[in-house]
Length: 279
Image (cartoon, rainbow, N blue to C red; front, side, top):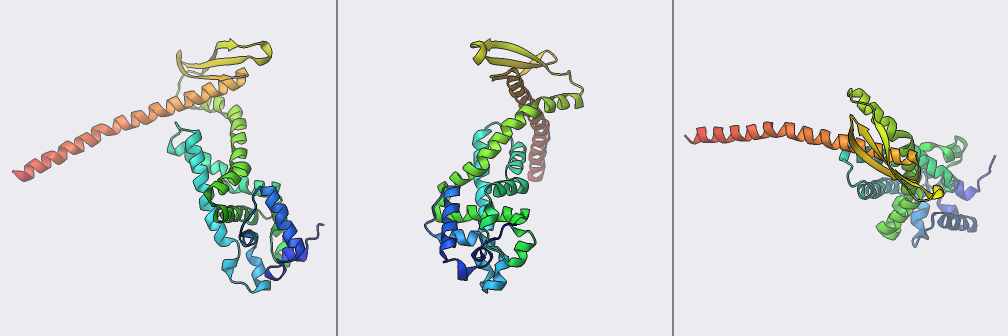
């Protein structure tokens, strides 16, 4: 079992020790950011369980920084999704965000960073598995984001989030696209009694070792989307994604058109009531 130095288990009285400072420097190298105000970093790593030993007020723990970091993370991820998916609607963006910043995802990232090794907590919390507990790790990662934001502003927080969270989510979305879009499209058409998708190769370009494929997806003989990629599988996935977006757009337009007569009728009724009142 790993034995943690006492300065990691307790709080204020031990922060100034050389071992503590070296550990903070290691963490700064890991995250690629050097704090001007290292007290913010110390506070981001301080679990409330240390209060009994240090006598500090609760505001000196990482809870307030976690509150701020959660909001900063939410803002940065929402902005990134808006830029990356200009055609996506609010519901789609919400689902993407929930996957990208889920508690499970944040906990996994914190574990890969070994963030638990840097946390200050009581002996009792440590013995009960606090350094690997999901909720503690998630809160610590968000507190770290809050600390970086206060110390270096939004650009520094964005760089950290992009490096450790957003880039991982982008890789995950690439993998998910290869697994999901064709099956999602098939489920969609089956649920509505529509003809099954047919994928047709439109073109193949380049030498055999660097060929690029363009594929379109036909449903009922009508092309609903095209995709290009270095493999037929990748091109089919992109075509299926475009088809799903096309169906979604048509459905939304249909809903809006259905709503217009009702609104127009209400407006006419309002004018008629006004005319009647005037008379």
